[in-house]
Length: 331
Ligand code: DGY
Image (tube, rainbow, N blue to C red; front, side, top):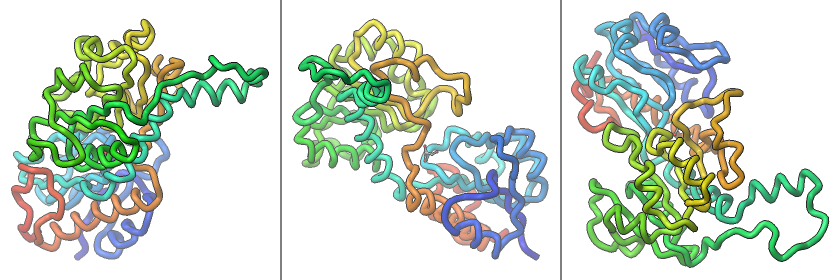
C-alpha cells in the first residue's frame, strides 16, 4: 500500500511532485491562501511525510495529528525556523532542508539588492516613470559606489561564500563574521573579523544566518549605530534577524545610508505593508531570493528525494543537524 504524504501546496515548480505522486498518495493543501496550522493539521492524519515551504507553520499539533506514521518533514527551503524542531526530535521525525541548490541564486539576488540600494535604483525608476526626468542634473540620483567598497558578511556558509565571490569580482574588500564557520583565516575570498570590526569597517553589511534564538535581532539599534552612516544593510536571510523598527529609525534619521531587504519580520504582508516599503532609501522585495525556475525546481526535487529516501529506509540526503533520529528506519 502506498504511503500518504502531505504537501502544503498543490502546485510546485518542476516535476518533483509528479515523482512523489507516483510513489505515494499525495494529499495537498489546495486553496490559494497560505495554510494555517489548523488547516495543515486537518489534512495530516496518517501521513508519513510532510513537504512544506519555508514559511509554512509546522508545529507539534501537526505532528501529533499525523500520528506515529510520520517519519520526515521535508522543507523546500534552506531556512527552517518555521518548524518546531524540538517537537520533531522528541517524536523521532527527521527534518530536512535544501542546502546546496540555492546558494548561487540567492547570492545573485543579494548582489542585486546591494546594487539597487547603493545606486538608488528604486527611486530613480520611480522618478522616471512619474515623468520627473526633465533636465539632466549632475546632482540627481546620486548614490554610492559598490566597486572597491568593503563588504561585511554576517554568516559565512554556502550563500555567504557565494556573495564573497561576487564581491571579489567587484574589487571589494570582503570581511566575514561567523562563529560557526570552519574558515578561521583568510581563504582568499574573505577575511574573518569580529562583529565589532565588521560593523565599523563595512560599507555593505549582508546577512546570511538562519533565524534562531541566537540570531533574533542580531542587528538592532546598537549594531546599526555602530555602522558607518554611509553604509548599506542587506538581508536575504530571515526577517527576524533585523529589528525592523530600529532599521526604520536609522534610515529615516539618515544614520544609515540605505537598506536592501528581501525578508521581513511579518511575511507575507498582503496590503498591510511595512513602513519600510515606502522608504526612499530602502529597496524591498517579496522574499524572492531563490526565485528562479531551475532553482525552485531543484529545491522541490531535493525535498522529494529526502522524502523518498527516508520512506524507503535510506538516510535523508540533507537532514538538519540533530534531527535525523529515525533516518534510515524503514517505515
Ligand atoms: C529559503 O530557502 O530559506 C528561502 O528563503 C525560501 O524559503
